[in-house]
Image (cartoon, rainbow, N blue to C red):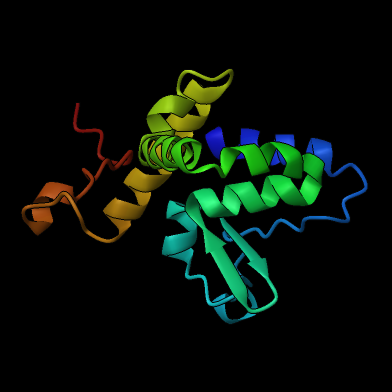
Length: 148
């Protein structure tokens, strides 16, 4: 929800959709080479802004994105050294705890549980969480065996 909220705010200020282009990194056709070399795992950890051959990440990417949609005056203030240090710290905390923070946003609990379910399925598919093969096997319920 933190990321979606950020995207919604940026989209609100970019009403003509001509300043920013969002990339769906979960698209099966996503190509790091077409997106500044940004790998999926890194894109999941931090926001990125790609301008030509330059790739900004983290708080710098946030400042650039908001500058591109017309809030450069505010971003200039946020770049003052002491304020920038606070911005960097805030970004690091929010980035690290975004799933926890998302639970407190409207609709966040449902989204958090969906994300956790997907993570659990991906982990199970990779065999994680199983000490031995039998532990992760599902019981075989055969409806045809009615011995009662």
